[in-house]
Structure formats: C-alpha cells, structure tokens
Image (cartoon, rainbow over all chains, first blue to last red; front, top):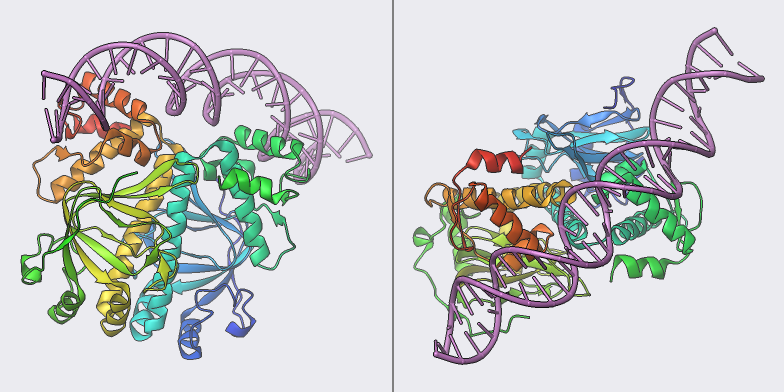
Length: 244
Length: 244
DNA sequence: CGCTTAATTGAACTTTATCAACGCATGTGG
DNA sequence: CCACATGCGTTGATAAAGTTCAATTAAGCG
C-alpha cells in the first residue's frame, strides 16, 4: 500500500520540560524521578508521512507516544478490507495493546503516520522494568488502558447501532473536541485523513461519507470548506445526531 | 426492562482452593499471600437471573468476577437502542473499565445476569489499596485490561467491516471455543442468551440472526437443534466465514 | 391447558454499497 | 508552460444487504 519513505531521524530533545505534549502525556503527571528514568530510556524520532511505525503481528518491542503530527491505527482482514481502530493524535500512546506484554508480545494492529510526525519511543522491556520500580508508572499505564477500553466500547455502540449520519456527526464532534482540548480555536478542526480513512474508521464507504458531509453542509451544520477541515456552525444539531 | 428479582444471597466459600474458576481467574496465578489478601476483602454472592449487578453511570464501588452462570454487559442509547458489549462468562472480570478508577469512577456499562449466577465481589478501594501493596496484582489487572482492549479492537472490525453471516459465524465459533477451553465437549456450546441479545451483540436484528442461523443449518455447518445450543458439524466452513 | 414470550418466515421497504462518470487539484515531463 | 497522468472527492444510477412490519409457529411456564 504505502511505500516506505525516507529514513527516520532521531531528534533527541533536551528534556521533558520542552515536550510539546507535557499536559496530555501519560508521563506528564509522574513525579520527576519516574519521569527522568523514563526519559533516559526513551528516544525521540522524526518520521516521514506514510511511515509504518509498526505492523500487526510483528514482535512488539516498543511503545510509542505521538508528540507531533498524526497517524492511523488499523487492522486489515485477509481479503483486504480495512478497519481503522483510531486516529492517533499528539499525546496518544500506542503499541501496548498487543497480545502478551513487556517485550514478549505481538502488535495487535498497524500504525502508520499520516503527516510528518515526531514520536517518543519506549523499549518494551525497559517499560516493563521501570513499571515494576515505579508503581505510579504502572498505575498510569493501567489508567490509559482503561480509558482506551472505554473508548473502544463507545465505538462498538457506534459501529453496531448507529446510522451513517450519526457516525459522521459523532466523528466530527469528537475530532473538534479533541482539537479544542489541545488548544485549538473553538468549533474547528483539521482532518488528518482522506475520506477513505474516515470511511474505514466509521465502517462506511467513502461515497457515503461524502454524501453525509454534503448533507450537513446543505443543512448548515458545518461551514462549507475543503474536506480537510471541519468548521461546526451548529453544534447542538450535530450533537442531536451524535447523541440521541 | 428486566425487573429486579429476589434478593441476593452471600455464599461465602471456604477458600480460593475450591473456587470453580481457579484456572481462569485473574487471581489464579497470584502468589498465596496476594490471593489470601484478596480473598479477605472479597464476597461471594449468589444472584438470581436478570439481576442487575450494576448499571451504567452508577458510582463504581466494586469489581466483580463471575464464578458461575452467565451475564451480559451492555450500553443503551437514549432512544432505546441497545448494544451488547459482551457476554460475561465464568472467569470474566467486570466493573473495572469505568471512567476513573479505584472507587472514584463510574461504570461504563450495565451488567445483568442471564441465569442464576455466582459472582465474587471486590470493593474498588480495597482493590486499589491491595494493588499498591502487591505489584503482581496490578500487573494482572493491567494484563486483563490489555486483553479486553484487544478483544474490543477485534470487535470493531467485526462490527465495522463484516457481513451478517460472518458475524454470526464468528459468534458461534468463539462461543464454542470458549466452552471448549472451559472443559466442555468439542464443537458444542450452550447459548446463554435470546436471539435479541445476540442481535444486539452483533449489530443486527433478531430476524437476521434467525435467518443466518437457518442458512447454516441448511448448509450443514451446524446441527439442527434448539436455538439455545450450538453444535458445529463443519468447523472449517464456519472458520472460512469468520476469518476470511 | 391456556397464556405469554420468543423464534421463524415472507414481503415490502430503507439504507448503504457498488459501479461508473466526471471534475478538480497536483505533479511530471516534454 | 502546457499536455497529460494520477489521486481524490463528488454525484448519479442501480443493486444488494439488512431492516421493518406482519403473520404464524413453536416453546416455556403458570
């Protein structure tokens, strides 16, 4: 599918104080000892777009936290159908959900950058060792995993019981809320993906996504602008779709 | 929906040695100290069918492990549509995935027994305290949660990208495999639920489930018997449906 | 045995997928 | 700089999958 582009570059940061996602990071609330230990085993790496950070069924030797950019986590069925587990945005942690843990596992999905990105890499065995030494780290990972599980359950309802319009509305709102909580302007978001990816995320076809998108524009729920941006003009109407 | 039936009865067990799910339990591989501490804060409770163990958005004060019987975990949309997150079988642990953890959280879904059941209850704050004292316990919980997250991601693909026949086939195979790994006879399983529940689990209608079921019977993939039992006669054909 | 609930089956209808054509950018090479 | 290829989004026509509605049969349960 996507070719493997330019090599990755390590771009060691001075320290965690300058980390662009201090507030969102799983490591952001840890005491400075733990954070320092974590920093020592980590690598910061710049990645080209469409770079495969890891692939499903590969041995899981590392976890990654996205510092900048965007990525997608996905699974592929043997016949080529794709399902996108989620869009990975700054602050998200991937690579821990594999079967087996701490360096003996297998990645449960593939992750690929969508735009130029920077990740922070943590070798799994180090993460395992550190999490025995620093209980707060283990707790933080447990909380993260729990949050992910929660989100996953919400998505089951979305995919199992919601209509195309509801799915797209929900996607728009959650993308915008995510952008807002990352400090963006109110009611707006940048869409990190093609419509094919969005369709693969929502269990639809790109055509259906496009049509619903057009309907929302016609109904005045979103401002008509290019398909890589969302500007919500009537959030309550969208919420009515996405929450009912 | 379901009425709240007879009161629950505590049925304290002598000790963990006689636990019917020793092998499947999250606590089964812990050292005896940890297990003893866990046992001391636990309660074993007998529940009538259709008893609500807990409900979505309620304060999450306990986690529960199912010892005997069967239950369903589900979410309800405001307009009444239901989605079943999963069937809870002996050895499954529920109540930990709520938002917020260790007694400050909220249950993220409802859980209701389907048949007479026995659960082992762990107060959340005790579980929190113990998991700080016994690192292996926290690790075990983290592993459990990771496994659940994995399963949740598989289900997303199922719900987002698979046809009705594929979903039903997958459901049958996984139910049978679960029954087999719990020591049941090969190729057989007891279905703990009505077709409505199965439909709510697979994102279908009961009519569609019934039709696919009938097709499988006609095609000789399963033995025709009552709809509360599955007897697989051609597993490879079913796998072809459920894996392709 | 009669009552209630659940499963089955058929037929009409909806929603979404599929297929195909077109438009619009972007990028490339002559 | 322009012709042309390529990829993506949009739109329409048509088909398929699954839902909905309704009627019937079968299965628990007092």
